[in-house]
Length: 82
Image (cartoon, rainbow, N blue to C red; front, side):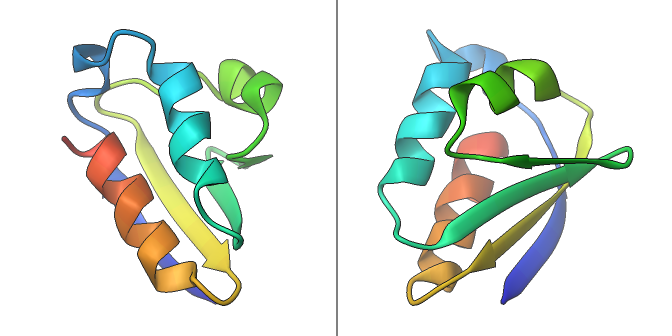
């Protein structure tokens, strides 16, 4: 298991950030969870991401678990802190 707390910045630069974030998550076999303000969602769920409403300035803990967990964590961080 790997995890890292980040502050989201620059997500609005993407044309469709919610769909693009889910696409990034689906590139990895690992489970990817985003946590913030006592909310915990699966990053591969478009409905979960829509309810999560990631926005600049939001503190998020990225938690990954699986064979490619470190690569998944780095990819999610790169997308959310662009």
